[in-house]
Image (cartoon, rainbow over all chains, first blue to last red; front, side):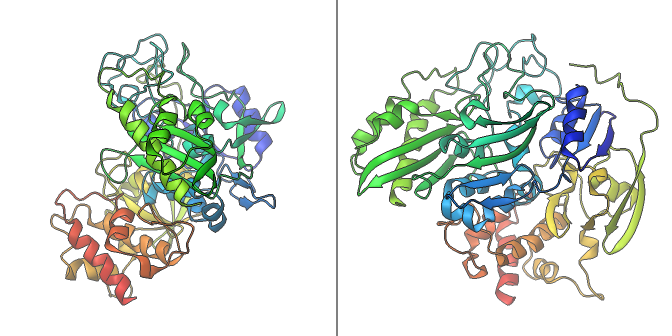
Length: 331
Length: 184
């Protein structure tokens, strides 16, 4: 790793001011992504500010209205084990448990989880191959390279990377809010607007600005929360990033879907919400496979697979179908 | 991006870090970029945690930080000032091996042994996680309470998936962990 300085703070205002003023300063909490990026020379901060000691930011609160507030410093493992998280939103607990390993889940913070950068091998490559995310203007090696793991939705000629977070997919499906404190005060960002599509600025993964500190993630009460499920398919059964994943949450009238929320991972630069399918699903019976398939297909009309990931179009629809079936079965 | 060969931060960056390692308070002088793994191995001579992938992919460097399993290669020593670290060297009590160590011997849970310290540290903490009622990706229904009695072979395999063994001793590792949970 390159040389850098290290300090810590227990005062959010100090952290925000330091980050706003200093473009070469990075926050560190769990460090499981940032340290990997530094080892691969994909992040070269000159100053690290350890924010893991900021007070009251590791709480997991079950709110009286049925929602949740998850502090940005809460560890993945604590959130996944929390009884109320499991009861109210199983999809959140499952998406966390299907990610990383027991060791990493004990280290990684929730704020860091949703900030983690793509696993695109060209981005992480130490040999510094063309990557607009790593070196803006250098090109995208994955566009015509090995892109089996890359996006089928929303990509641009500048970047075809996917977002690696699992819990972000669950948060997108549930329309969670990211509570951020910045130099100009606090604001709430709707989860589906937190991550960006690459466009011609793929170096920016999300809408945060210098000086922004994630305080918590809030999940409003959702009638679909309890009957929810996370399905993740990957090249090995455990400890691997997704080829394709789906977070599904449904409210049912008997065997008929009253309302559905579905988001997918492994298919785009951000968690990909199946908006068209969600509009087509209400009224469909869980037993009518053809109608479920037809509803899901409406969200795949605009899929644009690359040379090596055409399989994600079919696989994605099957994953969405099975996630909906299992979620519905939990109602 | 900046040229990594001309670091802008120069000079003596070393700082003092105090940690309780295997029950003894130790103060080190380290550069901020030193991982906990390198500090344990190179500064304190605890060579139980192994440096294999150095990227958080293999689990050979697993130690306990404040009694929880963690990858010492993916964290900086400077981040653990004032904390308690346990390596495999700290498991033995009064000349007696930890039950998990004993079970790995009895169940033949290793061949070359390079991953074993990490496997054992991971298993020690994993059993505590199960006792605390933590579910896993192998748990069918996370909304239900989880107990150690639910710790099937599939559960153990999933919970130990962060530790790779290239000799592929997995069946015997699972047996060793199952044996310890049966006895406890």
